[in-house]
Image (cartoon, rainbow, N blue to C red; front, top):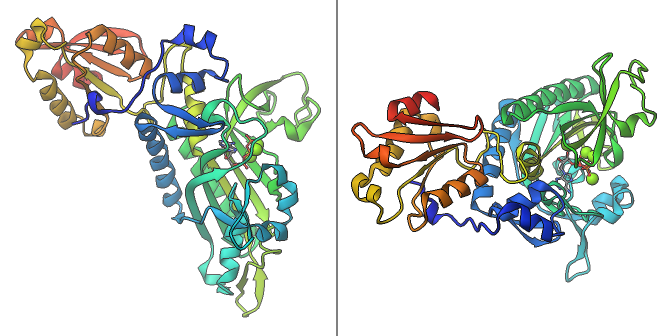
Length: 429
Ligand code: ATP
Ligand code: MG
Ligand code: MG
Ligand code: MG
């Protein structure tokens, strides 16, 4: 049984006043996540993810794992240390230079802390020598910390210097197959973002320093977003404005019936061609036994950025709001204050309700928590749970002493309060 009294969630301040005095918070989600004990800053752009935050992060990881594996992605884990010379061979040591975090070992070997792993993936395949065409397509992915010396780390998890990314690398024998794989992976991205359940926009993207032929980005529209996306209401085309320059739809030329919105990039897919496989010599053996360059794709999802971005999109200035899919908990049961009349009459009704809800609603397994911080009033705990954004808050009060007991159910998304019997709670949730 999960108990709030055992959870390390250092709640530090009550909204507004704190916000006014604290200039370090660069966005609403950044401030709320720290105030409500979801994360703590360790140094600029680097955060401790606390237990509540990690539960949510792991739910994103699960969704991503399921969708990557559904299309045949195989989970791997590449080393964080990457030899600098791989990046010299691809030409990116210069292109991405200022963003790279570099270090030397005791033998004066130069390394970078991986900001992304196209070179590593290409080099892995090339060190295997020549693999038969029969082994492709090959889809390898990992979910690991990435490091970028961002010019302006800000908005909490949204632009960190150390962050969690899912990066997948695809290898195909020719361009036609690489495009097929690319489209399959884009579909799996659509499913990831649909399952998370926050409105997103897929746009034609800028290949930037990654290079390649085709790219798409997934964005959450939000005022603080560092990107600007152009939506054409004439032909429904959407692009990153990095691609258009002029304020004009790059597909149909429309310049009136368009809108430009700020947005947070949360995913990026690239069809790379042989940009990495050629310099790093990732080849396969064709049907005639001849070596040929592999065609690559690379596909990123900002796993920790999503956590900050969905909270930025859904929360109010005072209270966190999560999509149900990734909320740390969706149901909390608040038991009476220690020593109160209700406390004496009710006994362990809270625990019983917890077990019953879990058994009647298996989909809520691991999603319910008991707020047994009974030294505090119900009002104080209700406020904490609301600000933390736990969707259904069930309070045991004097009605719970009746037979059969009734419970106060607060649905903080619909903003309603109901007094219900146990079976009605099950059908409501
Ligand atoms: P941005 O344009 O925001 O700087 P990017 O285009 O440099 O991002 P990519 O190289 O495409 O990022 O990396 C893939 C994904 O990793 C991005 O879509 C984003 O979700 C995530 N990401 C990139 N940089 C950061 C960062 N500094 N902090 C958190 N997540 C990041
Ligand atoms: Mg960047
Ligand atoms: Mg970008
Ligand atoms: Mg990008």
